[in-house]
Image (cartoon, rainbow, N blue to C red; front, side, top):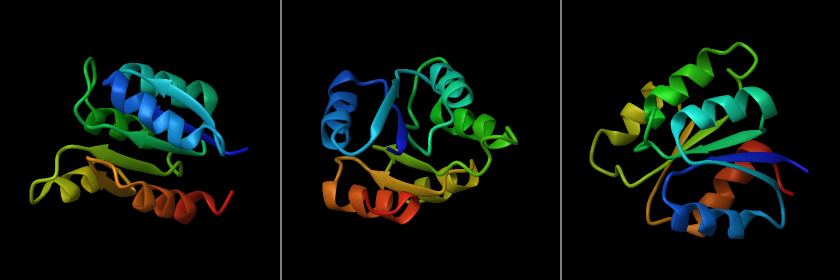
Length: 121
């Protein structure tokens, strides 16, 4: 079973994503960027869903640090964020995100992006 790390500080949002994915993927969760980096290094997930507005270390910096790790540099990271203004997607990609999803979450788009990076379950 593919492993997904969800880095999201809002309990409601994190729980919603877990409920959507837990039947088809092994799920790990982190509530801040520092915890996300640590879990990524320890658990080597197949994909990371990264909120960008996080406490401790924001999602942009957490993504940069994860992508700087040779063992994790090819791990797909999808920005999952309320930052949906013009330029935000480009900024997320510049920090190392491989794809971008804006909130509120569109389940069909989420599943399409997961299939793109992980294949069908």
